[in-house]
Length: 300
Image 1 (cartoon, rainbow, N blue to C red):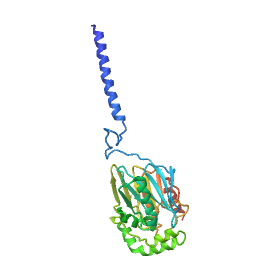
Image 2: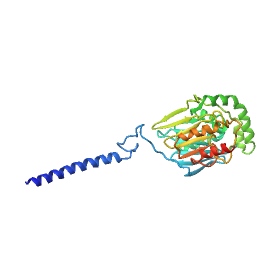
Image 3: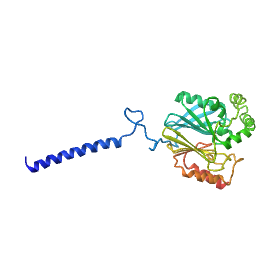
């Protein structure tokens, strides 16, 4: 065999070996991890999980005459109760199949309907609730959660305020519901406004981990009320602003508001990358709500 032919054979062999390893490496590096697939591993905690949500509603789900849901992503819902007024909260499925609810409808009556729907839709899942402030449209469902054995997280300031004002809120809610909805009024006569049963220091906030996902509860300072917090879902780029974020064309209830510090609190939310911002009230779900709130505060 000639020297040139030997060199050609060696070259072909080397190209084959290089091609084989390049192909094998390409398959490993380009492979999408499927936690449910055979032989695949779950993403490590350091990996970025992208679970998109959209300000455009994917599906509207009517639960009752006083309650509807808007699906904004896989396992992500905006809950809107309309008794005695329209108010939003969120329900999000986490990577370990736990459910996190931030805020609640204003009454145990509506909140129990959310829990019933969740059990039918998701089955029996671990759930937690996060109170975003002491107003009724932030934690009015605590009685339903606690009676169902669902942990309710809230700041020490929220717990103190609801303890001081629960009786007055219960009377106010009965008056607000009135005779417009006899079933809701009858249920409200038995309602109790309970404080959260898992307390955290408001200044430190709260970081919770569910599988490979985290939830951040953040207090940027006094705003629409002295104890209002926001709840951020990093993997979703979803911010539940509660009543700190305004979805209407006017500010709404400012009886407890710190009008000087509220804009400062909103500016601190700009640190969070967001695709969806859920206000305490209103239909808008877009990131522009942060600037919209600032504009309303500046023009007030």
